[in-house]
Structures are given as structure tokens and as C-alpha cells.
Image (cartoon, rainbow over all chains, first blue to last red):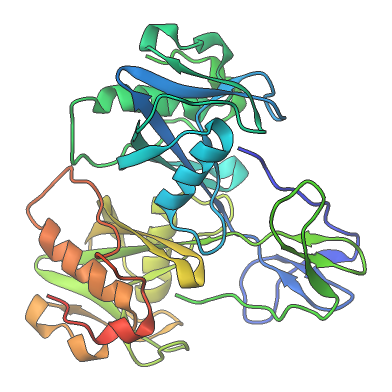
Length: 189
Length: 189
């Protein structure tokens, strides 16, 4: 999950545009309104038999820690197609989407995550440019102490709860959890 | 569903920033990169007994046509909270979210819609500033000829399919449907 970022130039100011009810970033030079909206992250818990695909991050944030293949949905892209693209970019993985596993809201980051349950169509995975390595792990082999983000813990736990189920309602944030980084060490199973 | 829009000033140009693989809007004057990402619409099919809440739009696009209470998720907002806020803003409706009914991708608009099934906690609804009027309709009373958007047809049909079901997987776009406006006249049931 790469976070695109661009410093906001000095001529942008927080103002409430006419007819609006919230502050927006407005360029004081030309009047351009830079509407900021929550971003959509699409990702997968993808398996080959009883093994789960994880990627060790080659980039910040959380370089060296393990994550699920996931990233920002692009313009004009369907959510399932985006999840498949990310799995290819980060792990050279080809997969079939099964169903929506979870919808998580990371309000601190204004991020909505759509995580799908998926099956690899081929176990031949390898690291893409944003991954240092990738691997297929049984539940007990998962590097629990080196997971990158709280929501990766959630998705793995929810995947396990969903095993053997079809046609279920997607999971949400675990009760009381916001995705704050101090939650990353919480027990996962 | 209001669409925030701001004309892109002339000094913005489409360029591939260093380290990126896609064209972005870059300000040729100051280098600010205006990342564009798909937007999240949150909405509800909200009912009181066997009646469904609809709002007649007081604003363009599709002014005068009927829609579900829905709009853009705001920064730092949870999806269910956003759906409840929109129901209040557009129909002064108070409701309880039941479960995620559907996830639609309107790729033409780079929009992902999260539509929840909900119950009104009070039948006293009234038009907010973006609605000309609001109403509670039985299935047969729905103004089928005056529905604002294709995805409103989809959500109503999926709501009907979901009746009596709990814990189901959310629906997606109907097979082959993209949300193009020529689809709005398609049969809804």
C-alpha cells in the first residue's frame, strides 16, 4: 500500500467555498478547489490450498514488515479489477476473486479498505517492485510479530472466521478498533 | 448525490511524475500534484414497514427525479456514519443501518457506491435543502418512470431480492451494467 503524497504549496488555504459547509483547500492564487475525499484501498486475502499470500514491504511505511497485496484503487477502475492488479503488481500473483471479505474504515487516514477473499490460480508468485519478498504461509507459519498494519491482522482473522462459509456479510472493523498503529501488536487470533 | 466540481485551472498539465507510472494533474507553476482517486458514495435503502424512502432531487444533475439518500463520504468519516448523515441531510431521516446491501462501481464517474439496507427509526421524514420533496413508497407506488440514476434501480431491485435474508454477500453491478445513463429506462423488477 503506497500512499501518494504531494506537499500542499503555500498558496493553498483552508476556506469554506460558497455554497459549501466545510473547509476545503483553495488556491488563493487561482481559486482552484482541491476537494479531498477518502481514498479506497483494494486488497486480497489470497490463498493456494491452505496457504495465505503475504508480501514483505520493500518501501516505507513499515518497510520490512509483512502485508497483504493491496493498494489504492485507480480512476475508472472496478474494485475487483483493482484488487487483482495490486496482487499482480506486488506479488506477480494471478487470482480469482471469491467474495468481499471485509470493509474497513481507517478514519485517521480517511481510507476505506475493500478486502476480497481470493484463490490463486497458480502458486508461482514472486516479488514485484514494492515487495522485498513474497511467500505462501500456513496459519501457523504467518510471521505474526512482523505484520505491517493492524488491518492486516483483522483481515487474516476475518479470513479464518470465514473459512467454509459462502454468501456471508462482509466483516467490518473489529469492535472499538480504528486501525491506530499501536493496535498492531494486538493478538490476532 | 451532489458532485463537487471545480474547473481545473490552465496551469495544470497531465504529466507522469517521477517514480509514478500514470499521468497525474501537475501544476506547471508550483509542481503540486493533484492526485485524483475514485470517490466513495454512501447511501441507503431505508424503510418504514413496507415503504421505501425516496427523495426528489432539488438540484442538478437529474433535478426533479427520484433518488435514494446518498452522497460523498467525507474525510475522517466512517461509511455507515456517512450514510446516516446523508439520510439526515437529504430527508431529515433517522435510521439504523442493517447491513451492506451492495457495492457498485460506476467506473465512468470513478465512483464506488456503498449502499446499506436500513430501517427508519421514525417515519417523520421531510425534505432537506437538496430535496424538493421526500416520500415513503410501497413497491407499487415507486415512481419508476422518474428514477434519477441507473444505480437507484439496481439498489431497489437488490433490496427486494434481499428481503427476508440476513447475513448475505452484498450485491454488485448487475451483469454487464456500467451505470451509463441510457440504462436508466431499463426494467427494474
